[in-house]
Length: 354
Ligand code: ADP
Ligand code: MG
Image: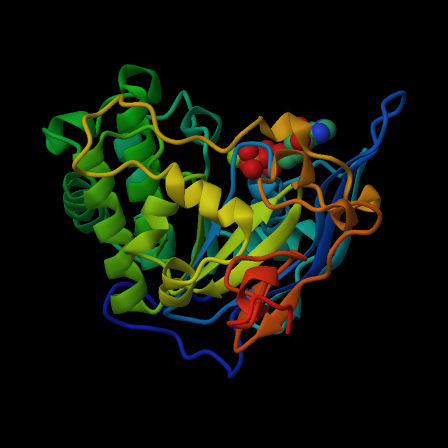
């Protein structure tokens, strides 16, 4: 296995070329398992992230977020999966890259926090060893330094009695603790690109806030580029520079965070906003859900996938899928977005249509 020279960690940052660190262009993923109907899980997704910036990808369960991140990291199985489009990291094409080259990029260059922590921790290696290994390999620390840093990292992600926990195996930790250990490992790498798939979903709100703080610090202090994947718009609200809303495998709205929260245009984004938990409502209180379930999604080939659940749908939403239309950096895939001059706003004072 080749190893990449590592010079960057908290406080010091490798220089990066101009342009986005990660550029995803028309990424599509189709599952083509024999004997089953093909599933297009990701459909022409494009976005980019620059060093020191964070991007949120938001959508309900099943919208294609995890498959997108696995495709970026090259972690989809080779058989029964067609991946098309382009994913470049610092100008280098990741799709179709050799396994050796990819392994050398993973870790210090690009790291991922998985939605399911158990699948990515080694069950037979104590947590402490898993963290210190990364520090020794990627940050060139000796045993004692790595151990101190590991304790510090575990503390920072909110693992109590970190010193004692070093000896614990993953199965001895709760789900939330495992998730935190995984985040500690990702932080230990101090990667140039971090893809975090629902990193805080299993955690309670206090720890969640703490982890988001850590991620924010990582981006600000070390210039890491962050792709934060979540079903919760509330998580990206205080966190991400740009937000992409995903539905049925496609991006349906993209804008910078302030613009998106100030002027959401897609009816789906409106629905997601209405279902964000508020700090002033008791935990467990039902939120305003989007009508219907993601299973009502229709294929984009037959019109807008969100049409069956959309409160603003019109007959012409069926037939062909709307294109992503951008204005001033705010893109939306909808024929009847909020904020667009609709029939009501073009009625003149005499009541006649303008
Ligand atoms: P999300 O992370 O947004 O909840 P996923 O990316 O996990 O959604 O899944 C997107 C879609 O791809 C879903 O419809 C899911 O059923 C499908 N999918 C995911 N993995 C596979 C697979 N290995 N084979 C077939 N379909 C899959
Ligand atoms: Mg997922």
